[in-house]
Each structure stands twice: as C-alpha cells, then as structure tokens.
Image (cartoon, rainbow, N blue to C red; front, side, top):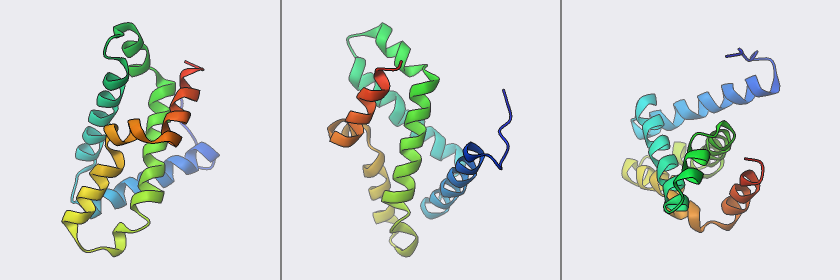
Length: 126
C-alpha cells in the first residue's frame, strides 16, 4: 500500500479525520476499536438494507473500496459538522451518545435525501 505524505491534500484530510475521531472517542469514552466497530456495523447494515434480495450487488458494494471510501468520508463529515459542532461543549454523556448513535444510524441515512443522492451518484461509478 502506498504511503500518503502528510503534506498532500489527502494526507491533511486523513490527519484531520484521525484528530476528529480521537475527539469523538474522548467525548463518548470509546476506544478507536469501538469507534471502528460501530462504523463497520452501520456500514454492513446499510449495505444489507439496500441489497437484501441481490447478493451479487451486496458483495459488489460491500467490498468496493470506492464505496467504503465514500462511507468513511461521509461519516467523518457527520462527525465534524453534526457531532463535534456541539458535543465538546455538552457535558451530558447520555445525550451525546444518543445523538451520535442517531447521527450515524443506517436507517436514518436511508431516509436522508442528500445522503441517498450522494449514494446513488457513487453507485454509478461502481
């Protein structure tokens, strides 16, 4: 795997996303492993919900690096703009946790028009 220099645009984005993930973990009291497990669980549930009757399509989406990159970038954007915009100033752990789970819930994303438009655009290039 090619190493990305931290001075490139991609390198800077990855550094920023790791920092945001660390902040989220601190706020929620999660380890990075718990964070990644929750993210992957929602990823699999989303793909399954969209492709239950089409196993070949499910496999194509589930193992696509393009789709996984899309999912991870969208997740990072929700972390930054929907969660970290309020959570660091909120001391109510239960509220922060419930909001975080809601923001990333695959069933909610299936109903979110803007996310589904982006999803459909990604499908066109798979």
